Image (cartoon, rainbow, N blue to C red; front, side):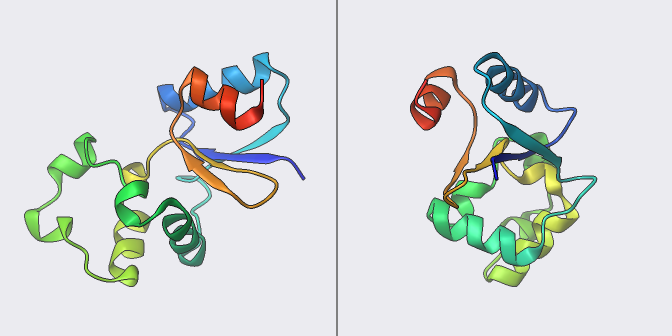
Length: 118
């Protein structure tokens, strides 16, 4: 099993992350979560590992800003998962799932160097 990178194939940040992984020959599998939706239970697990839903959701995105105000305050796990299933672009990108089950979000050169020991 190798690293799995979840994101959107059209996302520039995901492309940068994938290019970095290719450049440093890190084996990975890419999953476009718009084409292959992530199960609600997996989203909940990611949120728990990251410290809550706030860490998984990109609140600076155009998608978030265009939501109706009442949609921006999900109070329960099912409400969060429904929101993310309806708007997968709200998930921070990329989500990196390591072989040991640990989850991280986002991309930076230094962050990936620390994450992958390169």
